[in-house]
Length: 261
Image (tube, rainbow, N blue to C red; front, side, top):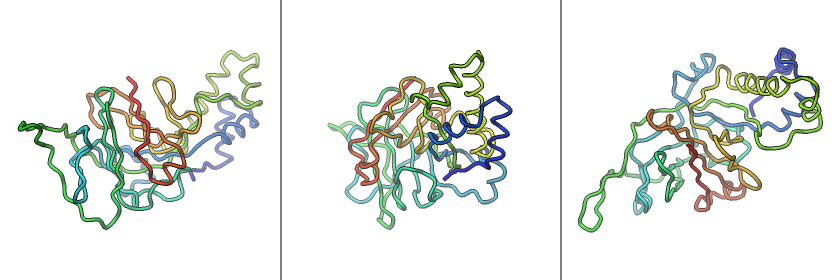
């Protein structure tokens, strides 16, 4: 679980004029996440022991009898579950094997899929070409980029605040919302160990959508992928959500996919 030294947390709150009861209420509503970033975005204090845990793009390595999803969506993310830091997230991911995310990031996907490939299963890299009605088709392949996991902290941007937060925001200060927003951003940077990247892949935590958040009710965020984290020229936000129960059971067929732009 991501943690921040309490004296440093309170010192940061005082800098932005956020009272201690508000801090306690805010932190109680925070959720941990894992950011997947290129090596040059890993905080310097973590680089010596940094271990790659994911890759964007490339071709999928699949077991015998398993092919590209029927919709021929591109492979956008592969996650080595065993390489992720353990005990960070509050959602359950497989302890080993690989998670493969297939979806469109350039326009709203008509179909998407997440596959878990268990550890030890023999796999073969699949080509990007296929035959359909005698014609050869090509699947979009994004440039592979190696990503490293960094723990972080997220806040619910959609929920109502608690009594202390509401009282703080209902006070006489016109800048109270700005102060709270600035404090939240500073806490995110503290949890990350440096300046948190705005363009990245995120596992777990609360979403940071560009529109309405899809992780509401029983749905929690599984993965959030900025289009530019996969292709520099794609300006979309791609979100994958599911229930905690389905994620724990590795029931990925009922996941929800949303693209915002």
